[in-house]
Length: 268
Length: 81
Ligand SMILES: [Zn+2]
Image 1: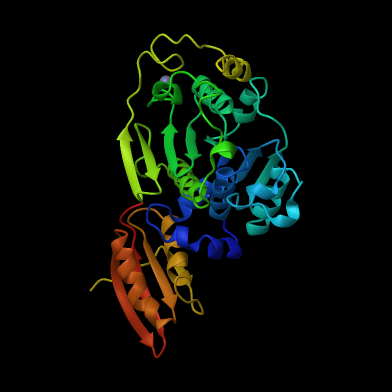
Image 2: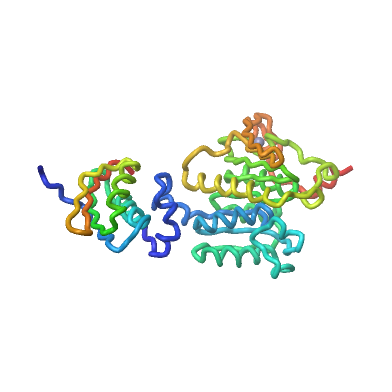
């Protein structure tokens, strides 16, 4: 453990925690996290993990910053409209903590590139806003055995769960099939109350830190559901489904699908 | 009483809380269980806070000595990782 003077100051509130200490901070500084999406969830997750000193943050998104993002996507800013979102968050995160190696990938995540992208990472965070990506990330993480902290937000409600392949459930244990494209509104269509992604993203960042530190209870057999309007958190049990098509005893999905096509087909 | 010989000494004079404890904790983390750390400090609050925090973290405080007007020496034995 060789911290610089600055690092001792920057991470002092971690170091004084018995559950973290210098050794835990070292684990955080050696960790490599992959974040899918630089939007509502990716911004706060990346922000807090950067502040915590995560060694490498790899973040992927192929959108550009729009004015309508700024009501909730806190790592962007007005003068960055039109800039690729990943370049915007890289600037923000590097300004917060130059220790962190931010790898900004301005591209779409696909079944062709996902295994390469997650291969060298310790944990994956899903902050995507659409079902094809959510199922792609879930299936790839299960197949590659990568832990995945999944988050979702809609209107006033958020969900967080942590998928550790083999140990617990996966996303398809909960929701086996992607919902038909026409039935489920995207975030953009449905609206999201501003602070909601901060709450859900904060929970995701906390799961990532606990996973890295190997401390506390992860949401590996449960899901937290936050209802903003009722100011209520619920923790519901999520059993592993032995008949799950990806992580069950006799999986039927053994290679990645054509998720976008599946989603459109279901539209009819 | 028999004198305890410290396995490691740190001089944190000039530091204030919480860095006094941060330094002491980092030093303890780098030691083996059973070894003794000597801490020399000149921040009065830390002469109370460090022993208390060390005990909270499961370590033994063997000695808190005021050696002159404004300096203290602590001896802490590492009991747990
Ligand atoms: Zn499953």
